[in-house]
Image (cartoon, rainbow, N blue to C red; front, side):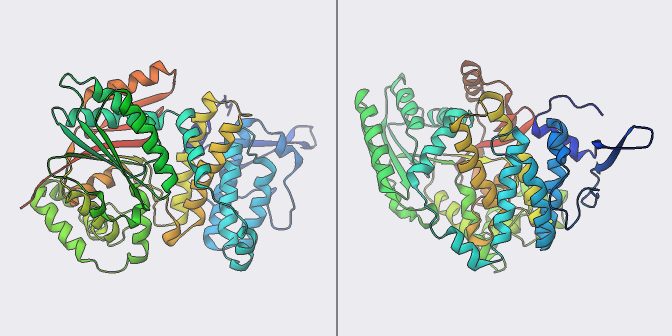
Length: 497
């Protein structure tokens, strides 16, 4: 098989279709002088043997490091899969051998697949170390965590990739359309750290034919300093356009948020905006996943009143798994209702009667039942994200390396290494969020054609090639080529009997 220059996300699809790759060791030859080849890189499952891999061998043959990029990428994919299998089964000695092999090929400064392999091996090693809690704590006892650095990295992601920009454009257009004619607008930002979205909204509202409304933004963040900076920047922008404006800061983590502190006033048209936040609440539910929650029954009764067709169609589609009680990745009404923290939070937001709620989430299932499920789904998802950066940013870029290590790398580590309430990156697909929000009493709002066209125009104007905006059941999905990466959906308060 002759391989051209494939992106790592495509290599993973090649791997998924069980391609057989012939590896040649130039230092080995048969009697007739022809090289000895190995077809051991056949990918039907986890059991494919490696002639160069066995316990006791310290490192692969040196020629492995001389493989072409595509061959090395396919080799790394199977090495990662095999290593993950050993980590998941608790075979630490075997996993250690595979990690050593991968370390010969992986590089945080190499091509896309080498970079991905570096961060996945770090995550697998981190999980192995947690089996030795004393050693793990000692190695991490001096680790520093800086909110300012986290915000800096997220802003680098905003600058290097179009995803947050697209989310802001689509969300703001939905808010402007929903608030047409309103004189008092209140926006609740569930993670308030980036003023760019609201600066754009202030400018757009100022251009309304009927004039701008009185605008109040409630910003939620765990650091007061971040909110102070947001307030100063947005007040400055509002004063520039002479728009009546208030910023209401709430210092709190999302899981600890008291909805009553949001102080929604009578007569205000309310919009709620959540960008890459809601999935973290599923971590709180992990400790309760085997407890029976009254909220499950309550939400199921609610959806039967307001949306019998949706539930009926779902039950007809999958009557067996409909009653799965796991809150992880089963697409079932009862499993969704059995997530008490998420359910109570969404019910509290529903109780505020928002005219609009816009939600952006990662379009992937990193909340699977098993470690192997999460690893393989994450490998495909982050391969596409790494490809995005590879297409536009130099490999030597420090900004790129920071985003890959401190954003993508930390997310990968959380998905693979952490369990329980520590595992915050519980991304789930749009279909799961649709059912969950319908169970909580929200009605879907179709995102407009104009919003989609604005997003596409932004991609053209900024020279972003390879990205697509696709419609899915009235929601929009942001794709890298044909791979969905983020979803944006809009919702409204809906009464039920």
